[in-house]
Length: 217
Image (cartoon, rainbow, N blue to C red; front, top):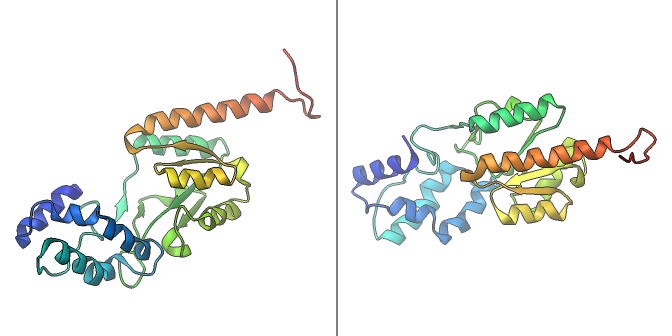
């Protein structure tokens, strides 16, 4: 079930105003709470039981019990993120070419024991996985990016960074990374942009002799 369908189902079962869950989840007040979530200070379960339900009841003048919506952000019973087939193919192609791939994600713990997290069903496709809730800091904090670079053993100017948020892109650029804005609905364009950058690098490498002198046509 898609998340909006799950939210509507929950609203109907609890007798809550239509669209109220989405309104609270997308509100500036919840955005302020999300820092605790993404830096591991609070799990989804804990936030739902105290901060979220308190905010929800205040915003909508209700008196409902805790709502399990953060744990089920992508729908009821979802604990894994299913990656787009085009993204999977691109990752596999990069690794076959010897290019390292890192997942740098603002993530959160689902349960109060801080065991479960929402990750791709197959993390083995990534050379490195860096999660905000595990590291105690979140994008766009430069510290999280530096952790990824250290684990990759690379410098910023050796990396290409894809993300859907401008603030995250800005931090990557400050470290010398080349960047691609990758909106969810423009994934195929982002993959094409990545191919262009990698092809340019390949041509640049081929334009030099082994002694470092540039070849001319």
